[in-house]
Amino acid sequence: MNWKSCIDENLIRNDPRAQDRVPATIDAADRFLSSARRTCETGEYELALLAAYNSAFHCARPLLFANGYTERSHACVILVLRHLFRDDSRFLQFLATLDKMRISRHNVQYGVSRVTRGEAEFSVRFAGDFLQFVRERATPS
Image (tube, rainbow, N blue to C red):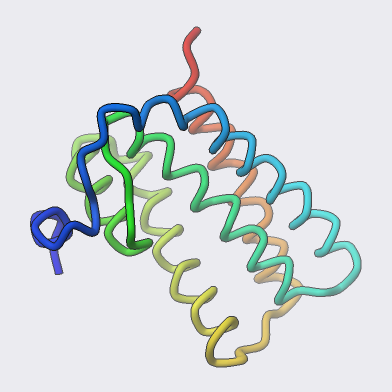
């Protein structure tokens, strides 16, 4: 699948009001990050990874919304953002990690994979770094 097929299959859609969703989505990312941090501290590493992924996913969405799109597929969010930001190497690094987390989240949620403390802590740190990166780009100065 590529970014164009995501649009052709209506998994990513044009939405002229998508930009209105940016602030609430960044707030959701912040709430999920707080939950991930608290959960990691209790040793619930699978739940911490799930919350960290949700935070990171909600970090990606505002950049999609800011470009006038909404989503129906986690994978397509990453594919379309890779296309839209193909010249931003730092953002592409975030997207590569987000994609790996997407797969890990799927394996935890549906394949009952275990998560180590190190994986959970990395996921939480990544979500925090990604949130800071997105805030710098998605909110007006």
